[in-house]
Image (cartoon, rainbow, N blue to C red):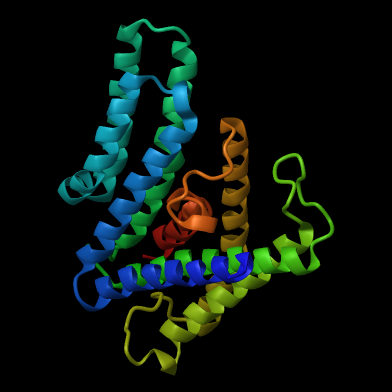
Length: 292
């Protein structure tokens, strides 16, 4: 099996896993999606911790492990707001431990620890905000989380896929060679096309007569405004996704690694698949904050 075919097959399996976690949560039990997201965050936090290596002390490493493993418990006990507050509290606790340890390079350790609490922990909390979508009037949970999560995953996945194939087939002009030598302008343009196609697919599934089996489209009365919203998510979601990918390249270069791990074969680690999704999710969470 050639590298491109192998990468494509594994990519499809990953996409099906996304879809299964979201749709099972919609049709059966919403907590299934929550379990999936909690597992993803825990793995991503641990992957970034090991990428940072000895920049984070062993004592802080223990705190990171405890934080990652208890993230799901925190979410179920306190909800989205609780995950944010506990993340901040963990940073304060880690700061106290580091100060009392009197180790060398405390400033460097604290900055690395603070970075880890933001990237990926705080940024990935946007996925929980989407998953916990509530109606601003009734305060009751809605099913809008399903379309929001689909937009986060589908737009990002199609962005990555089209950027990769456009880059391989047409890539000539380097995008930002000092950060990522392999990324090209042609690939980035393909990513934008992929983002729009991904948003269009989600629109067809949730907002048209094809959506007879679901009832969870975006709560926007005007069809025109709804289309504009999907186009905006397709374009800016793709930009956010590619920004996240470039930020990940900077982090990996700083840490001296190629991928965060090898859990997903040629796709690297879980964090390598979510570096763009979580940036896109922030943009979608902002849209949800405005329309719900």
